[in-house]
Image (cartoon, one colour):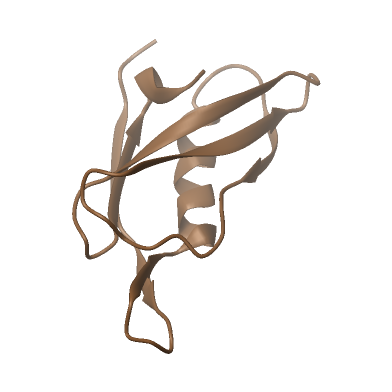
Length: 91
């Protein structure tokens, strides 16, 4: 399997001016990476209301059409909401 790295600059501000990770965009990124294999992805769920924080990681839950489940580790690259994941981050 080729190593695929995805990089995204997804952020959404909340009413306090705090930058948060855009949950839907993170789910799309995790779905893109998880879907690069042979088993279709049924659903992806990432945490809501995460503050953007450089160096912090979070996991998204993945449910495959086969009934199998897994996670995708998402890495926060900065405090502006940029995130990254790759095939090697799938468990």
